[in-house]
Length: 296
Image (tube, rainbow, N blue to C red; front, side, top):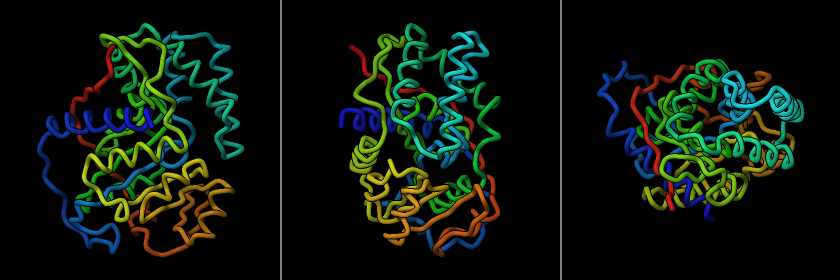
């Protein structure tokens, strides 16, 4: 619960600052709205898992590649990250031991560095390693919610700084992510609570929905992993995107909508916006961002 509440607090802070600083834009030519999402429903929002749902592979691995390039750690550490990434891509599931190792490694690497430094580097790493790995179909699903006037949030175990950079570059509302402790803008090497994973994601979504006045029964959630079943079960519109075996089975049993962009298989149910099928590209909003951090 602490991890979820901390992530929701950080996400709302960054979203408000992003909204305040965003430049005015001219809307593009209107197109026929799909039946879902519902246009103008301000009690609805969408929550997207990141790794293998929005992005191919793990964001933390790609971030690690960028830090290695900048001499933050040794080549042997990158080899370990590479093995974890290979497992993730081949098995299609998140391994708890790999996640624990990745978390501990990341915390030790960033300890003593300034939050602002990592945010700036994150912008560069997004362009170098992440931008080309965004699933066009999932991005189009997110854009459909934005076009309907709804807020769209990333929900991920990746550090909230990385998640916020990705959300901003995709033009999303904000991000819920694992919150690392910092004091006077410097990382301490500790977390606030636990990683935002599994049930913690559901707690974060629940906390954010309460703070934003959302009706979860009218909200949508998207994920590839059975670990996110608690989050998917919270909302009225759960979607399995590029699902692992356990999630695919669970989704079929509960008649949830399915979409797999890895193979081109069609959705198991109708109702997913047509734009997702052709991989429409979402536009981004350029703005400065800042994150609230719990201080001692």
